[in-house]
Length: 360
Length: 186
Ligand code: SF4
Ligand code: SF4
Ligand code: SF4
Figure: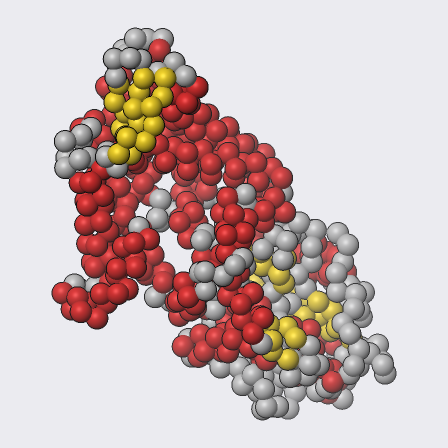
């Protein structure tokens, strides 16, 4: 997908007019990209697994929904700034570290609570593992061939990458990758459901469509997936084709739902890496001094970006005292408000704010 | 009957009960989201509370790239959705009153949500429930209007609400008494 985004950017001027919208263009380019990858991967369509056809359709619908959501979202003034500047700052030295922290080990979620964190690791990595196995198979980017000598060959994009013993550990892990993923996701979802049912606060806020549906969908996928294995091993494949269809159906529904419901936070999370880079980069360049106390509280860039974004929304906080409110540090901004309420210039009194955090 | 949070600023006696109460509301994880300030700390003891005024056109939400700040159907501007907030801190820079707080460790913004799990069912917010001096009240629009008449300052000037704020707000603020040299009748 990375490469398609890059090409979209380059060709912007020349082919822009041929498409009705950003959306149509991104969609078209992505589908073409998928097609080409599949063409190469399947050695010119000689190795397509027709059992997986439904997933292919599901993926394409997902990409459509995803672009639709992403583009609508990216058009908002503040989002646009972060995406544009984020892409520009993508190659900072700290990017890999931030990306691992935010996208792989979820440090910030651990600080929000260890229970949530375990739940995220289980569901997140379970899903990643499942996708890494499923999608290459679906588009036939990866497949296995069996040779007479008891060895399997793993073929990736038409290249033989590995010979493995059919009884060996790597082979075992590859057959069971999806089962392991399913068990991880099931455990994570059960933890999440348990929290939703027991925790009074969660109960007060949750909505079925937003909070429960995605969990049930994930559970449904994992359980039908595990049942497939169970049927295979214990029931000798009894009813397996039917279950396979049900499983496929559950995946497709989830893919279609994904860009719109709660799970949309997954594809959008990388923007938090952009935001971190943005704050670090512009923070190193120049910090803004509070117009009242002189403290450095935010980068000059962010302060002016925010003023501009608010301007786009026809909000303008220029004060008669000769500053914009976005140019005051937070304590001074609060004291300035008190001064507007009371008529006394509280923000000019050089006393630090104190006693603002009650111990619960 | 729809009620609003209503602030009568100069009643404040600086007890900070509202701060303590705020820590106890659902989902606040024992951290308060409001403030109490000394007006003229080196001279007298007058204090005033400050919390989110729940703007009708909230700058915090407009500046949020992640659409993490949702506006509830009651008009309350909610705290950041934990799964959406990307930790950019735009909202803290945008708010004209400096209300949103930011937790760097959790990479998450948190702010006054008008105790939404209470107020959505018509129960007064925590801070208003505990305020011993009637600084923070939970009133209907009629009651607020009556207050406005009662403290008929300078031809119905509602000194701290519009046009004295940066925009229309759902929380109504008033300062009808001593600081303006007007004797107040309870
Ligand atoms: S007072 Fe600040 S935090 Fe509250 S709604 Fe308005 S802009 Fe947002
Ligand atoms: S810190 Fe979070 S809530 Fe605030 S603007 Fe950024 S993403 Fe939105
Ligand atoms: S309304 Fe609730 S969240 Fe807001 S300051 Fe009062 S107690 Fe805190």
